[in-house]
Image (cartoon, rainbow, N blue to C red; front, side, top):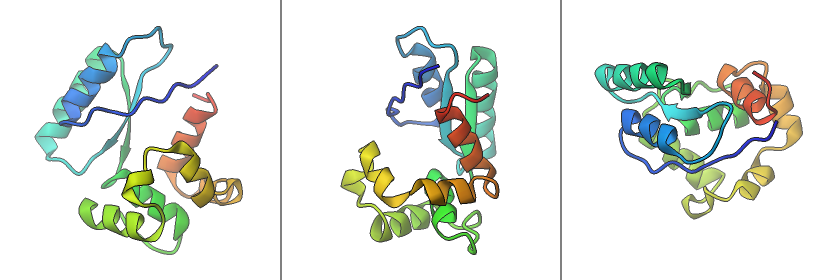
Length: 136
């Protein structure tokens, strides 16, 4: 199994699901990573759209940066922080915003040792690693 990663086009959660559905390609699975810091109704619409379209969602609370920070700082809880704070904290301490789309940059910050150690304590991280490895 091979994994193809596409950068999203942004927008609201439902439109991100729709964009994933409309992405050209014969994919066995379509999986979207979403921040769940949006309103309840907005997230419900995205979940409903995903279910109808057969798209799987990996949600981060409140955002991907919170999961990344929790991976690097295991003794801290970031799930109650604001998304904007998590983004600033991650970008000012670990990876400049301009480098965020370069996958090779993540190799420098997240060693295999860190990921292997943390994946059993952070469910979102374990799911993400399993997805990258083609494990359902």
